[in-house]
Length: 422
Image (cartoon, rainbow, N blue to C red; front, side, top):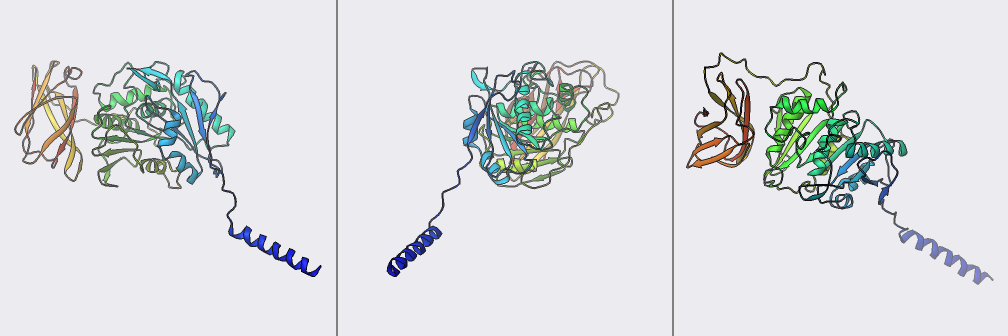
């Protein structure tokens, strides 16, 4: 009997030791799930949801949207938002788009009259329904709701920020276009005031704070021109009533340029050499930090007075000469080692409308233009000629338009610009 007791005790000790050295069952990872019946759904979208196992109290919410020809599940698998949600405890909504345009499928609606106004219908109403479902179901924080996306999803990000500034507190579009660009107003060159007016008209009478914007674009994007980055900057800085000149410029990584406007209401990120394939690894973490979901403190929103829309400052015009005349003004927008971005403003200084314009100048030694938008470029040696394109040749007396370009070398001019009106 004593021998049996000793054997039993020994077996118990071995079992206890085995339990200590052998790992227990692994915790199951959270999974992407589809949610149906989430509320009003005029866009007939599908909703996919990622809720991490370690959910924060009153979690934040991120809406992450794919590009045309993409899927919600593909965007979940190919981006880092879900893994960041595991780390910081926020919830990610992945809407599935279903619209077709220009031979592409699974696009988000950013062109219909319904999609371009607050509570108008179509995809934005469906997405806001998804957000409201999550806020109620998971006791999420309505003051921490954000939007991000790529290409068509980036367009919808800007669309949501314009039409639902009462819902979204910030957004991070990757390779997108300004709000209203695909609507009746078109994507032609506009002044910051015109871009800003589109946003203000998306929700007439709204007087609350506006969502902050962090927009990204690659310089070699052959689908949506890199110039769209500056158009977004013009739009949102005007909405906030802040200068189009950055308050600081930084270089977080090689070939990455970060421009900050105002006190952080708007950020523009240029990725040198990148095409239409954002976000690259690591970029999502910057967006989550911009949202403040990683524990950082984001900049507070700004509320411009709705009765006094912000107006881009301009010098008082002198007495214009008779007939047709124009002048060209050069501005260095951004500069980095070995390259720069510049913008040229063409102003009608005559007393009559002009039907076209030509700007000429001479490049300094070692400088070249690598990409130009909103103009027709021709060069002969170091001599540069830029003519208007179809949508920005007609300029009323006292009015202006602009074109922009990327260059190699330094951004300094070695000669003055001449402008000829026709």
